[in-house]
Image (cartoon, rainbow, N blue to C red; front, side, top):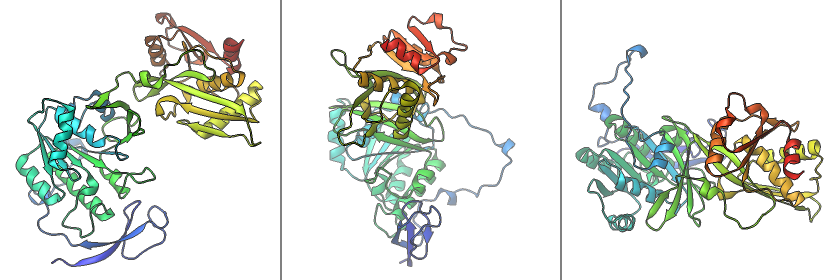
Length: 454
């Protein structure tokens, strides 16, 4: 039997030490070291580098870039988030809370994609996966194969014989390698198993999906180095008690990291939501104060999002400032601008702000919509649901121009809005005559208030 030794790993960054340390010298985090037993490498590990001659250095100008075609997943939302499809040989990590729908999404891709798929499950049996597949579709393709296995050596043996065009691992925390003696899900096991899978994917040009667990803090379980090793990291967000799910990119070596995909959880699987504004704008009866619509951009996609505000007198002396889906510091800044530049007394008012639909927005273009929503609730004056806003608010109370304004105006017109309020400094190079929607351009936030509230 190979000799074992005790090694201490940092759970945050994967730093290795021969003794326990209170503070990690790599990431400067405290109390992150855990003790694990590690075994020397064995000969039965799948290592493609042993089968080929060692690579030699090449001049950069001598290397030819191969533009291999991406694999279409038949899921338009996932294709958008990945940057146009799956790149051959790429490793994609998708993480989310328990019950959010990660396994459902992966099985749905395996059943619909036009490629030979090997679905490796370490959590569910073959019968459980079959039952879920029957709920999703009546006609199951013959190119999706299931393997219930947790040993990486056995997985590689089957993969070499099977030669899949796409591989799904559910989940990376359940796999274990014979090279490491610690339990499955530990820092060293996750790092070792991921390293072996990445070597397999790169050498065979097989795209690989890894399903990952998250901790109670919302971070991906395992060492932080796991996110550095893979090519793409996707976060599957949303409340598992609600129907809508958001697929967000946090890292992508082959595309943009600002793309967004939206799904609706149904009895037969996940439905793609091609028009996100249908869930981000709630249906209501009658006029309600404190509700406005802002035009934002996520990646290449314009969205119309509903902003809800509630302003009331502070009951306990100290006013509360609470925001959901919006930066609390930016909310405090906008409240200071409204009080200093516009004369509204908000110092003794509780202010609650909510982005409808559970989405998180960082686009400064919704500043104007947030300010109008707050004043609408303060003055108890409703704003027409046919009006929307797209402008950044500066500290002087001025309206600043935002990027891709033409796309925002076009989306507002397509969804039936009659008026959009923007900054007059953002109209350069835009032909407003081609839009049927009424465009109101202002230079100061007071001008917008005069137009809305008189």
